Image 1 (cartoon, rainbow, N blue to C red):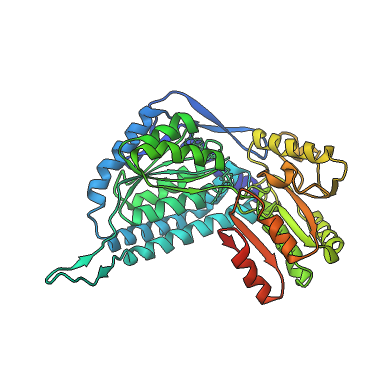
Image 2: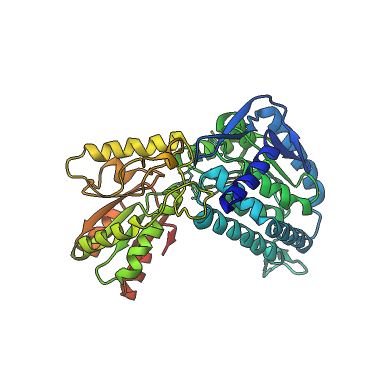
Length: 454
Ligand code: NAD
């Protein structure tokens, strides 16, 4: 059996075992609902199982389980909770081969370039949060009232609702559940309908070191399952990662009960190369930064690639050379650098934006621009890594989040000009500048309107 066949077999066994299951009170069980969401392998379009299409009945069961567990969990000392979370991380480490193959099968993200690193980073993050259990400190304040102490403590809030997207479903799951649990909360996680299995497997393994009910996992669609979870009266905090549009809905739905909400949303991020940059590093940097090896499906993908005029042609030539070396194929094949887009719907989204770009007379496709042909790509959701020049900056292609493997190169003359264009967007997630001028880099950090700057 080849490595590819072994990986596929291992992942399919887990997908079958987790089909139609949710995690409640420490056990994998069938949901109340009989409705099911089919789950496809993005690399082949084949059905690999299904996830329960939970509605408010299953939401109620999950929240009750979490609420009951919270009453005891909140009383366990924080450092004891941290030890249990660290033990959970060790279990994940022991079973990482299963987790990473299922992640790759579920999402279409290439095993070697994406699923293996994402799994490793998720375990590392779990350990980091376990270590922070000793840092749940309050403060005290000087008082002018004799014989009194004024101090704050950090207390758990209750049941936390965590909603994740499909593009990095393990890392985003851990980033939500680990800190919430270490801090003494219990959690109901709603997985993404397109990639429900890997987050369920991770949770099943991880929660074996926790009291039952501290972590519960359900699956379903946004309106039918996500909304009753967000609005449930016993949910005291909402943490959401996903699109700008859904983030707005969630903030509105949670507002009437004055529930704190954390939103991590989309981006249309600038990746800027100044003419003084070391081009050997910077050209590879924009290819990596565009997350072509995750089919561009990353919130921080640098999809607006600004290049100073003097080096414009040289950068495009270098990018062409590097893109032509990337191998696209079945995500579970370790020879693949690039896997498949998550779904037909997301593939159509890429095709829609490419249609707009191609209709524009000044567009030049520097690399890619097509669906690949051949048996390897026949039924999967594949699109070539694509770089274009000449797309007007005000085109939807340069303004809206495509969340596919499509980037635009945009020339500029001066730093001031590029800053004004880079900041001219409703997003503000991340930004990158390539330069060897440290003063310029510091000026960039100050002036760019982005939360995460490199
Ligand atoms: P999405 O907003 O469509 O869905 C995200 C999750 O929200 C899914 O689980 C979905 O079922 C749920 N949902 C949808 N409607 C809902 C509703 N009305 N109420 C409650 N839940 C609802 O996003 P997506 O297509 O799954 O993911 C892609 C988006 O996520 C992109 O915009 C990307 O930039 C963003 N993202 C952001 C980050 C970050 O850290 N900032 C990381 C990854 C992805």
